[in-house]
Length: 358
Image 1 (tube, helix red, strand yellow):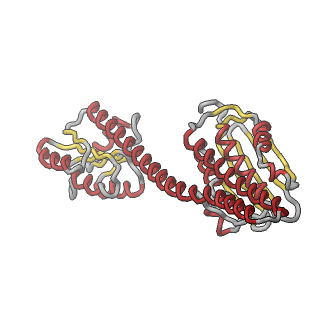
Image 2 (tube, one colour):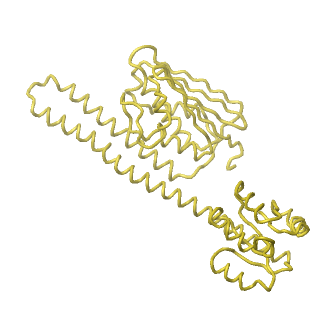
Image 3 (cartoon, helix red, strand yellow):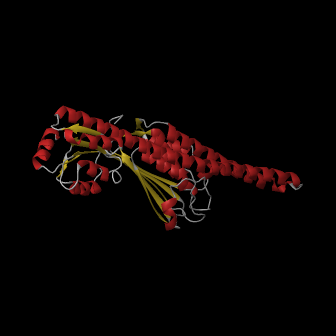
């Protein structure tokens, strides 16, 4: 909190009284207080009313626009009571206390101010999250309707075409086209389920058998991708148990490994490498491939919803968005390095929660 008063002994007395409870900053003038607030986000400001050049009310009113969330408390004498009442009614101050102030009275006012401040900040954050959710929902509904109808229309068109043809030699080709459309829809439905699970299920830390988790992911991998003669490499180094949210980690690794398999080059050596380094403090994963890579100008947008960096074997455009969100929810970071035509490396790191529930 910040205390503004032109009398130095008042500043020192205030700081001495409350330094064990709060981090106290002091300013000897309104101008000095404004300069400090321009550089720092301070939850609570206390100002004395009687100051030269500028009153406490004028100072608190002046910071209302620049620091709208800061709670403002005024210390004043009885003779200024009418000006104080006007300032309260105009919303320029949260509370006022008459001098000489009582320590318990100020402590109660400051505690109340901090509670209101944190409540307001949480409300603002929730509103931002809600606005983001509404925007994503609008985009999701629009894109989902398109991405789900597209394979259905393809299947319908193929069925109608096959009925018109008397030559049965194209039957196998039509079945392949139908299968491809069904797989596209299945992938999109899986991503919708992943999106729901990531958003609705709370973070829960459990000890994870990393080898078993990776094997489960590889076993559930699209069988069509497994037939592409891709060399799989695993380097899992664990010097400590891994404690994390299994659901979210599975979402992250499933999407990264599936993409590494999916975006391989048509010719040349095909490989995917899964790396992990688990220590007591940190868990780090890398999924690398020798695939088609990502253009530099596309890297910035790959984690946005429905963004597609390539038309080669296009996915739903949801997987990496969900991956990024899942990483954020476990307090981690995700980075990507890629060279077009040579491959990509996705790196995820997050705190290892050895104390379950930490």
